[in-house]
Length: 224
Ligand code: DC
Image (tube, rainbow, N blue to C red; front, side, top):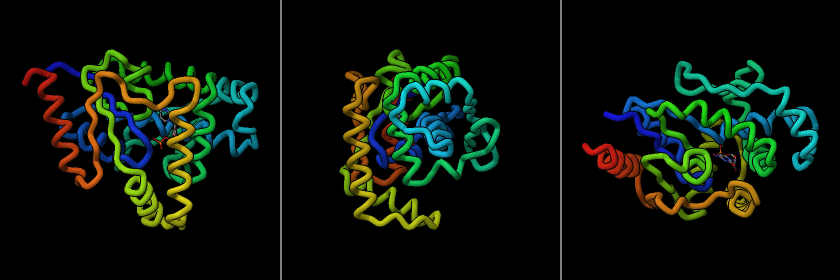
């Protein structure tokens, strides 16, 4: 079977990561979480006390920063200058920091190249906001995963609780709404559905149902 490029875009909490990992597993594909890369840059900027909208400072930071994804035990690991930051980037604050730095052209240019290098050979599921529109507009299968905002925020909040992070449900709803707005209103590579993406609304669906729908579409595209 031809090694496809599969793009999954959508707002935060829509289930992209869980569905993307499962789909990649079923197909024997590599799973690439592009949001993790933005989170790693956001983490470094916060640690260095850099103003997240300060493009000159962020350009300098990008030039001396190495972001790497690698398969480790238990899944994908994220390395920032060789430090494993896989857990450190999963906080509510890092979600907001990632969203802020992701609006900066210098950050996007840098990560775009990395993402294309990782995916160009095919056999990959890439997940993010602009995969089907900007990173791989030629991807053979594109999905836009969505769910209503309350459900997405609730999923995020439950994930935080499982990790022992007390985020507050109302605050999580507000943050998800802000990220939805900011990610879809920025000038460069905003979150939007690619014209040829299949929309999957995961509200009220369980993850197995979501993955089954996606897999059916992928097999159809692959001519199986
Ligand atoms: O998917 P996530 O929550 O880990 O993403 C964190 C932020 O990174 C998100 O709010 C916007 C940004 N992002 C982006 O701009 N483009 C991508 N392809 C992936 C993430």
